[in-house]
Length: 380
Image (spheres, rainbow, N blue to C red):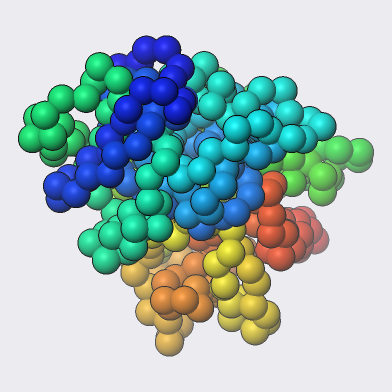
């Protein structure tokens, strides 16, 4: 990635997909060039949380909502300490933000963090193209980075693919830290950071949980050194087929029958730990309006998603695994993709979506209470 100064609405820009299709617009954020996997997000709100979600590492996010940036950027809503997306694509950026918490424009924030974006393109056409052809590699070029499109296309095709990418350690904390319980401490949880969002330990802390956030490289001994009542595996970027170390640690947790909860990447880690495979979705689920059914209650939830991979587990039967019986607990009603797993013979479950979503919806927040219930049952 090469970066120069901010130039939204000034410098010309071009987006080039690996299949050769291109879109021309104007620079948004930093001027230069960037590469990643082109994906689209259907959320109409919460762009600041999306940008700072570590799960979007090495992805170029296309916003399907046409008007983006109208509430500016504040200092309260980031999910991490930086923007993680590789690039940002919008149709109609707000000219003037209007919100009492806004401190700067989205354009300024992207530029200050060196994030190359493009505006003024037909994002609906681009989204339809990705739905038909699938997520693919992409490059955004602006200013002096623009060359003959044949040269740009060659650059895009040289960029690494998301399949086979081992990225969790790149975004995870390097040092362990503690998020204290709010009010009276009831439990201690060891949280493996595979790309954790700031709201996740906060949701647990609200329930009286002291959260010890550990690096993705943490060993089983380091997990149990904090004397946890439960173990949590977070969301994160990359291909779950590469996550051999987290799978090994989770299998150790399952052998000890400690209450376990996983979100997103953590769901895929549980799937692998139980012997199921994983696969790459054609264009993934990203946004805050995905319908999911909790098959244990029949309830349908509107949920927030960000995943390009899924677990390959049977929907219509209970599976016998090394750690007891397992079943699919949640399923996406759009396409029947596995959205949750649970063990029936010990306290472990996971979901593929985001019950901690700060921007909403909050239909699935009860899952943190379910985790508390498992820890209460184990202690009893």
